[in-house]
Structures are given as structure tokens and as C-alpha cells.
Length: 213
Image 1 (cartoon, helix red, strand yellow):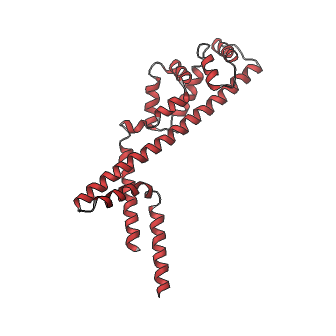
Image 2: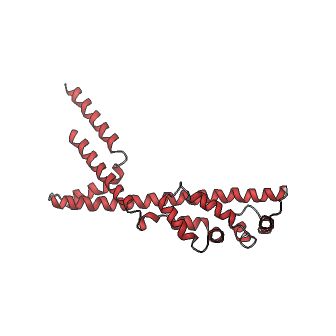
Image 3: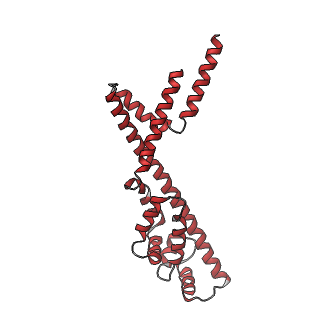
């Protein structure tokens, strides 16, 4: 039982190391896992508004911000502010259709007034407020989905890394390939719970020892 606890800790440590290796490779394509889902959920109308605000390289800029910090940092604020700045009479109809809480004509009229610097009436402020609230909800959903996809892809990549390391170590130690594969597959799921599981096994071992006495 004591040896089993040590094995669990070792397997968990392999999983943690595999995660660390994958995270260290964020400068590669790994760093933008899930970005395609972010762009897809935002939709072309929002991306078009961001291009109005930030220029033709808006998507490239977002990708670099995403690589740095997916849910925090400057990315959420950059998207929200860019979409608001990019709300023009030209982009308004498509944005209204995408968001779906205000009519295209109403939003286009509000965009014209905002662009001209004229004050908005109460009803028009309500239209703009509903649009911005719905837009923020869509942005939050896009960021959440992208983060979920990123974590899933990272776990998968870490699993491959753990299996590769386990196979290399197994070959060096002349262990059966099946054992190395099992260790590699178990490493990533064990990583977050290895200490707790090992502690539980140790406690169970001590309890069994006391019972024998």
C-alpha cells in the first residue's frame, strides 16, 4: 500500500511535468488552441466591427492577446471596446442581426447619431443598452467556450507528452511497453489529485496496520 502511494505520486508528477512542458510551448500553435472557436462564436459581424476599430490586422492582434491570457488581461476589454467603437451605420445591420435583440434599422439609426455626436433620446439609449448587454453576453460566451476548448486540447497534448516520456523511460529501464502506456495515460488525470489520493492510500494503509495489531 505504501508503494502504491509512491507510485501514485510519481504518476501525478509525470502529469504535472507534461502540463508544464505543454504550457512552455504556448509560443507555438498550442498557445492559440480554441481561438478558432472564439472567432466562430463572435461571428463575422463582430469581427468586422473590430476591424473598423483596430484595422485589418485586428484578428492577428486578438490572437496574440489570446496567447497571453485567454479570459483575463486585455483580451475581453479589447473585444468589448473594439465592438463598440466599430459600431457604425455600415456595421450596425449585421451586428443587430447577429446579436438579435434590436432591429437593424433601430441600431443603424442609433449608430448614426453616435457617430455624429448628437444626443440620444431615452428610447435610443435603451436600444443601445440592450445591444451592448447582449453583445457582452456573446463575448463572455465566446471566451468561455474558447477557454474550455483550450483546456481540453492542452490536456490531450499533455497526455501525448506524458505517454512519450513514459515510453522513453520504460525503454531505458526495460519495462513492458503496456505498463509505460498505462502510466502515460494515467499521468494527466492523476496530476490534480495525486497528493490527495496518495494521502488517502497512506491513511488506509495505517488503518489496516492498526487493525492487524
